[in-house]
Length: 194
Length: 236
Image 1 (cartoon, rainbow over the protein chains, first blue to last red):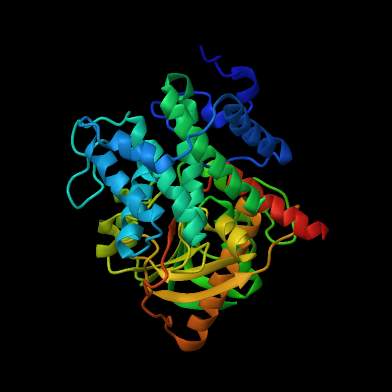
Image 2 (cartoon, each protein chain N blue to C red):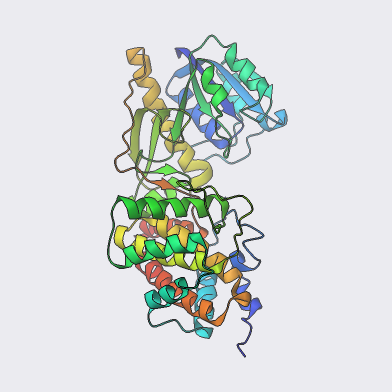
């Protein structure tokens, strides 16, 4: 049985201590706490990686999950986007899709299972708790950052990974493995900037 | 003191407003009238901060205006989109409104039906840095902080550009949110107003969308990296 992550050690990093889908983070006017804060952030990620290994082939994992008939329309869309990005494509279409989902998450701090056609307005009464949506967008944002070098993608990735980590005790083993792979990528980007 | 004809300042009780008023005084430029809008009028009487090389936050808006005998009016209302403020604006003879509002409030469409042009200074070069907390992204990506004055329109950060400039990174002891960024905005405002004083009109050009990017509230990790970068540059 997987051990529960040490809440005490990770709780110094305040952005993952509660369910972020229900208690949405605002991230406004954060105070500067110097290196201590950055160390608490790194600890929050490394502790998760210490307890969870990643997947060897993220794309294959997503494709297998995408064949499940229960997959939401948002997941289908994000899987299509992820495939394009992982194949090195970056046209106006990829940018519009990625920027659209980025804005959708940044504004509401949630991803909904379905959006009104041609918009990023959630369909009425649609759910927002499907973890696969968040994992797919996070993985797509890694490509957005590495291909474009624009920090808005990394910014959103940090927030989505905060949300996923805030749900860590409810994730399946496979979801944790996928998240571990994405967090490894996140830390590579962080190291490049730090 | 040069009085800017047809121009009024509409200012919230904020560090940005303090920076604007002090910069205008220093540049010897003043609008015909200042309108201060605030939920609690006591906030206008206190400085709320310390003096520093950029903005004297210990000097309140009212103190600054009274020192230079600039006519001002106080409206007890914090919501820029309220009917109260709309009525005040509607009855103003001036066409141009230099706007310094509270963060998080966006001007609603009815304010654009009043025949006024709102001048806003965005803390970022446009169109490359639309959106929020753009100073920090600019620190990380471009090693500078920019600002752009625009005529506001109903779209966010897409108005016609009046003036824009970039400024070096500050000393690490200076608060970016409450001191340096407001100061940078005030400097671009002064350049904009000087051009108006010289020409009698605001030079402006339509903002292009090529290269436009919109940024969202910066994650604390990135904010810390930006501030850490400023510290390192100051110690280099």
